[in-house]
Image 1 (spheres, one colour):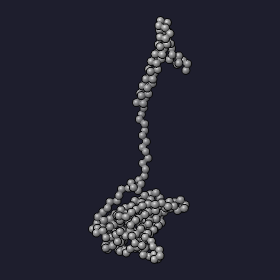
Image 2: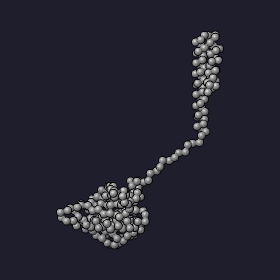
Image 3: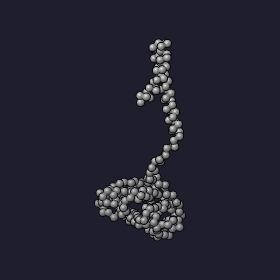
Image 4: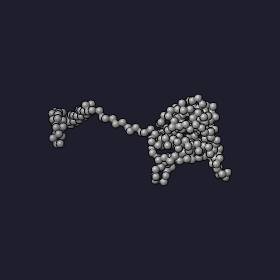
Length: 250
């Protein structure tokens, strides 16, 4: 280290020794300072130049893309609203796994059972007035839930497979999906419907405007996203309020 220090100072000291005896101490000291400053500037510039050259010769740094988050329910594209002879409708997939057929049928049955406890329901098979959306207008209908509103605006309804039912449009005022988080058991899902009239099956002293049913389905993130999206689509066709809540099974 001392060797490099001497190499750094020696040129300045040599220059000062040549100037000082002829022009005095102050001139020699000024020469020493000027030479040291010039050397420092040259060394700094040289170091910066070498650094730039190394940076230019180095391969470009690998850019690691940020993790792409999984699509949230709001990110899912809307299901296309289709127009049939008697009704406009959306055909929905409730869950995309091997429980799809059972979940779709259970959802339909619970909807029908809940709605008919509040208002009159007209049910029928394909081709009847209750179906309103024909098999010819649908893709495979056994494992999808079709929600519809009649073109004249009088009816709303649902269809699964060859079965369908309709009821007075406007009877349902709100739809809620509850995600039951699996803190102790396997979690699940509950659906609540609100109506503009009280439950016809309740005693007179107990007035209820809502109906809740359990889908009897284990919780998973994928199912939560799919069911949230499907319920939002149902609410959009029926033109009712929709929200999602969370509960736990603890």
